[in-house]
Image 1 (tube, rainbow, N blue to C red):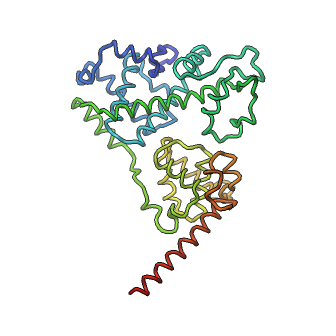
Image 2: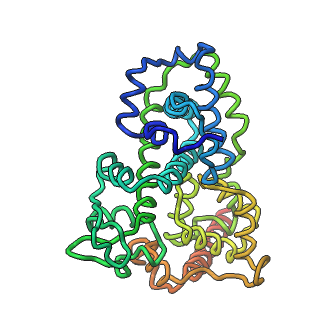
Length: 360
């Protein structure tokens, strides 16, 4: 098990500009990786991807290589391999895993390094607060804070619950690192997208690695066939359609959004296994945990209380309402929209059947 404290900052954070320059100066090309001398880099790149599939956010820094060049060079190679696989779910899963790894390393790093990366790499308007007002070590510009926290549904991130001094929001070091996690994820995804737009020709040994990785990918191609009939999104309220679409695209939606969608699907009568298949598209999907959470919401675990779908007011409070409810006709709960919409669809089907019967 390597000691991450002995690894250089470049090996720990391969998204740094100086890390990219180092690899460029090292002179590695894709053809270099067909040479057995670089097999350790290839294996580590493969391991990074397999760790993403199997572990996700549970990735452990102990999996890192003790060889700095191996650790550093395997990162861009893994990105190239994922781009060649062309799997959006895997891309997001990998980005989440690398961001989680960086987060765990940052939590053990010194404050100067954390602040430098936040400022110089991600352009975040953040500075140390000497007074440490109310135990907050840093402050962030209001604009950057709102942009970074807009997808967080926890009440503690809401601006009304924050200390704001002269247009700056007070934050802790852990909160700064949490905001940086999303920046790392965005960086990784952007680089995968760039690599996908101009896919290179890979040496035979790398193509073999790709085939091996593809064989480990979970089966997750579930689309409209699992939500046919009266559970069809055609009758869903806009908020649930949007959360569903984001989940199916492999986006990492908030915990509250997951709960809202799961409770909605349970209350409209969808099969629990089919609900699980939908959430299998999440980049941080863990089947055991997801099944337990769905069964808990359905009242089959824990207190045995079946949860209802959050009200429209609660959806608004958590930033999940679409166009402030203007599309929903004044309902107070997404379930009310669904039932009304379903009645309308049934009536339309009945009228259509009667018209077709008269014509025949």
